[in-house]
Image 1: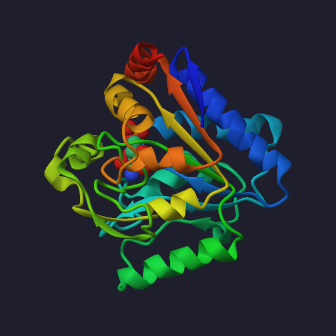
Image 2: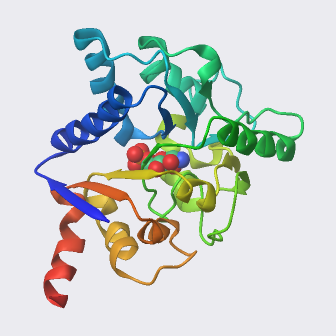
Length: 250
Ligand code: GLP
């Protein structure tokens, strides 16, 4: 695992965007795993800029999003499909049939999850998977405890996550859906390169737990330490507890 600490969130977004753009430029048919959340907005904005200014070409890129709320229509600004359209898909030249977000309105959610796994497999697997981290230590929506052999499935969101994500729902955690579909921990670990980005003081404690404490299903992000090619990009605020604790150990 490579951990990169940047002076501020802007520099973290730059580093992440340049790794993603590198994957797109160097691979004739890149398959990206994409994430949502506030952290990702700065990264997508840089990718859109790269497309508009330098012609970064998304026409052969396929993408799979990590997760989606259950029960929200695409037209709802809170749905992750809507978020992705808003921040990336509407601004770059990705083909509509190359873009995948789990369908949280599917009649048969189990069948939807299985079809999602199959689509990832059929695309040749994910080359680069972008990840954020929730305050519960989740990657995707793999709330504690999430078995490390879990695959795409329906999950119940942790109250801490519903509070963390309430901003998009007028600040009311009760309005955040209780259920979501998410790639499993094992689905995520199947990607060839993992890229976790975390910024801000609110992520510092969970980052230290994920990077230093026991590898456990109680902190999904700790599973990243089992992966042979994982890059973690942190700003100084998110890195602080990890750095303090690492200094005490060494
Ligand atoms: C949501 C997503 C996660 C993401 C997290 C971080 O919960 N399901 O995949 O990691 O948000 O969000 P933020 O970047 O807003 O802190």
